[in-house]
Image (cartoon, rainbow, N blue to C red; front, side, top):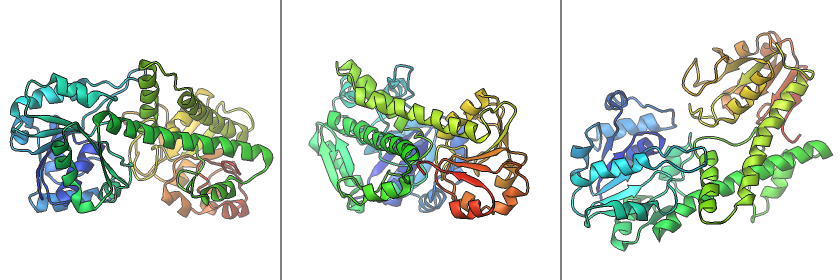
Length: 427
């Protein structure tokens, strides 16, 4: 059954939700206060880098199932389900700031149709759905939790091929209305209470962060004992109880979800009298991984980075996105800069100064150009384009002959054959 859907907020989650809901056949209106962003979307231009987004954006608008507006009141007046996909920025103590969520709900409430379901798609503290229900002045509106499990760079595919759909609501009919939106996907659906639904989101991300920190710790041990982490990961992954996913070592984890959600879960635990020391250690271990990667670059440069040019490949927190939020690459770059390094960088989606990019980084037009005059090359984001760079082209412009491959991305044999010393992670 096709439904009338409203989406409040057109960031990563909101825009992905909107175009995918339209793709499933629903009538979708997306709302954002940013007039410039809405104007661009109305022209059919995507505002974020995301695989398949352009395709589905065009498809939905061409079919008349997807529209964009700044007028929230009119947009939600006939909507059966309204998704809240607004920002929940984090304070220094790890607590999520719910002001945008509450402001959106208060502004929408007078204009919602009778029987509408308002759905928290943003990651919010446990208990948010229930507290929002208490703030409503109307009794004909229901609040539900429907956490997203989207990975930037593959958000569209993740939405359309989900491992599961989770809906949390005290009202079964409202929960089923939300779940029905996803029916064409044939996914496993879990309908539960709102607190459980909200906890699932935090628990999933915290577990994945824990797995990554564990792998990076094992990789550090591998370097000390002479083992190869690539094969260690294979040996672990063949165990069905562990699984092969999230076993690749790297420079540390980051992005818009893992750091924020991990700290938020520690804060939630503190509020309820439980000291989540395990997760605190996971976060601390990740910070140590940034330090270790910076130290590896420093060592490769001979022990000092003062005045040393370091080439950096990759600035975004992962490939396939233009997102710099909590990027491991930038964490490491800032440590290198603090030690006096001169940074020349290349990233396919970062062409110059922009919010979130530290001052002093020289953004280059090509991977090879970034290596001009460099003593060390640090590979910090796993963009596939880096695997296609010819070692001889780099050797022609780069005086140094050491690569710190923080993603184990490059062909070690090919680069070694070209005269480079290749230092991977856990190898």
